[in-house]
Amino acid sequence: MRHMSLTRSKRIAFRPVVALIALLAFMECAPSASARGREEPAFATSADDAVLRSRIAALSPSVRPEEAEKVARCAYTTGRELKREWRVVWPPGLQNFLVNTGARKGGLCFQWATELLLRLDKLKLETLELHWAESFETTASEHNVIVVTAKGQPFAEGIILDNWRYGGRLIWGPVTTDPHYRWHENKAEAVRRLGKR
Image (cartoon, rainbow, N blue to C red; front, side, top):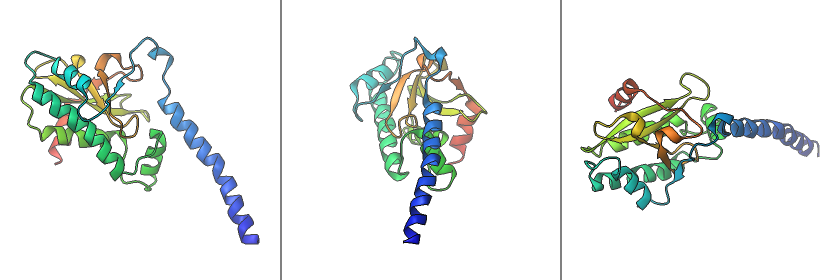
């Protein structure tokens, strides 16, 4: 009887910790007041999402439709595969906590971005370019994604590909209209990540 009461008291003591973690995770993902009036990124509906494919192809007349299709498919399937492999939970702040305490192998935003960058790079794209993007750099809220542009196109005209924000569900949208983040390119980080292969 005494053992049961100790176990129950541990569970009761653990509940506030879980509630605090969930609250912090929610706050990390909550939009700021400055985010109003900007466009939420869209969810990719499948590996063959026609809207995402067409938006990538529309970056420039020089973009080959088959490359746009490969990028959309790779970004979507990468999120789904890593979600299973890393046993991802939502919200992202909770997954981050589990990774940082050793309870999960992966799932931090830079890990999602790195895996996607490596897989997209293997496609040997000729009409599209990949960029490492950062927001809130060097803070606890830092977030990393991959941005795709047409070859030679400015970073600010690109499309973000983000698997972290919704735990493996790919979201995408224009770099400049994301209401939650202000994206900046880090060319050196892209080179460094690709060089670690």
